Image (cartoon, rainbow, N blue to C red; front, side, top):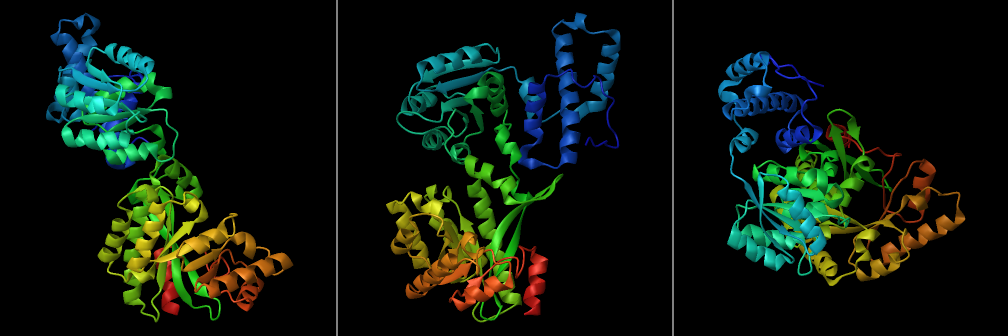
Length: 476
């Protein structure tokens, strides 16, 4: 929805005279930091009108006024007067700067490399300062040529883009970097962004977008892949909490923190609407860190206001992309320290899919968490053929029975036998069993009779916002 300002300048053109690519480039500027829709509308109008006035004035200064009518000359004068000193900002300064943008291109495919060079040279504002076939050569070339922008393929023979980008940022901090790739590997986009890339361009859309991306990042404007525009800003996320109760007496012993997106136009969105894309792009890493920080601080507040013995705990989820972060343990340790909670009151839930890559690094990380005191829960237990192997190899404190088991209780004799054995296994290995998806009282009764200690599900409560959780805690 377009927002009308109190003193909106008289427009000097009809909508549609700029191509879509130009409007997308302008949007990249004003959408920085995910500003509000109202601010975006105001800034977009101002920037477009300012740029229009500047371009027309440039034509007059260069003696190209024959294309301007007398009405346009008069409109231009009025527009310049109304814009006045507000004609500033990164986009205006970039267009006002006639210096060419110098670019270095790094790609190990000779044919692709030459195609990129030809594409860039079609734009008079871009000068290709050099090319390289490996990351190492590209880093050396960047030190020599000191270009404005480096375009780097995500997959190179000597190292991937994130590693190369970190080195480039160290040897030449001023350079702007565009990752150029057809890689579909999970987390590739966000791994590059975290390393310091200013933009990401898919090879499939390169002809339309690459030159615009070069000029945008040279001007200091963010360039995000279109997929990133479908993800939430962190300040649009909220946490809902589902109570975990002791089946013996119904007392709340903890909460599982579950993320939601408070979309400015579509309302509250559930994880299925955005987490798959977040996992694909790697943005899930940022979402998880935000959720851990938020949940632990909320736990500290609840423990202070609603004391109990033992303390209530909070469970948070860990994704496979989180494990690729070498500083993951330090992040979790720092979060518990800043929240001032006992690490034992934080439970990290790990699905079996996260453990498929059974590496020494994963074992070391889980061992570090155990040493810190953080609890570990194997989520969705029983959904993979290697479940028992994971229980044997990894130091879990909780087993969470998948909803597929609880949904058939107590009617299915086979499910009853399996659940009873799982609960016995957990007790024998000094782990707590938690049943998910409990919706009927007969399910809860059956689970309690088989020795399952804890449960969660709609029978007790749906995931709730903070204020509703506090009402439950206050009621005891």
